[in-house]
Length: 550
Image (cartoon, rainbow, N blue to C red; front, side, top):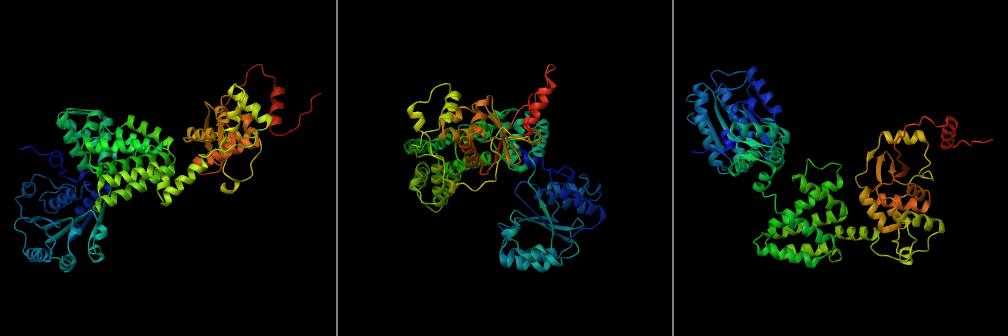
């Protein structure tokens, strides 16, 4: 009979357990020193090795020829435990044996000496499922069991255990296994099964397993049923990661406030037998990915998708403000709760999408924040005073055309001074920082990932100013944003106080912080024919020293 991979490749010794050295090393040292406790508590998330380590420990304390704390695997006790013929090691599922009578029966059995082994070991899985009366019945036996009895309790929800139980056990916490360690184990198992798996495919399975090696092996088992050569495409198809275009389409409908399109998509998905609660969960997970990408410098390790979908998510995240993403998460989670309380799933999901497409229909705090943020970005346009001639000339030079009457009047107002927090005094010209200070800042500068979105916000203020920064990049260093522009027009605009305020406020809207502005200029090598006196005069002018020419 075929045996699934997670059972076939279950570790037989502590050395084979993956990703839990804080548990296995301690247990081996205790066994070698003969310091065997009467009660152990193994806690951690699913698939991390709690039951596996409990079985290894039960064999190790009874092994006739242990090897450095590990069971030998060859003596009659080890073979009997593996085959299930040794009755002195008892596994109890507390989910189905959670009553007082079950624990009383266990206490009576514990008084009898082992039949074949040295210790009678009770492995109680999901111990948090025991009733209050069962816990009370277990307390005295757990505190002072017979000399030949060892209890090993395993649970995923340690917070549900009474403090009286916790204080009577040696506690070992199992951590989620790192994706790299899971991928290494998957590669080894695949090779032993006569198949091949790509490294990226193994890492994708590891991220999908969310730290649970058992889940990873189960998914690998499914992939091997599809193909002996496991690629990223095979994993995507097996795990159902393909065909998720509807999530991007629903999000775009929300971003464009197209409620009609959103309802049409929901109708199509409903007619194709898509469960609305499952769809709501998937869209909520999609918004979570957008939130992580939006707020983290590198969210690749936390977003479990293929590389192509990650690029698509990044592009969509840059186009949606963070308040809108948070509003989407809150609305979808509320809709999901109502669905599971018995509401009509389709109607709840349709109402949620209408609220996301039309925030004015939603009275929650998140919707109000989203609407205020849209106003700050300049959704409502007014006609401001005419620009100064110098500013108009700089704008016309940057675009290569004379500004028309419509372009001069269509400028989105900036937030009032009351809406902008007070900022520290800054040097007036953005490009007039001393060279030493510029060099020091550039050494610690990091690329500003939100720069494309900042330019998009700046374009709402004035398309002419934003066009002057086409092809530019920006870097963050301390309290400065250093701008690397391909032309001098951008720096000329930043010397104007009004335009400099435009840029600072656009940066503040996207990043939430107030920065000073400065230039980022690549280091240029000195030309051999350069006049040293002119170079010295230039350095002196940068430092603010007046140079008198004769």
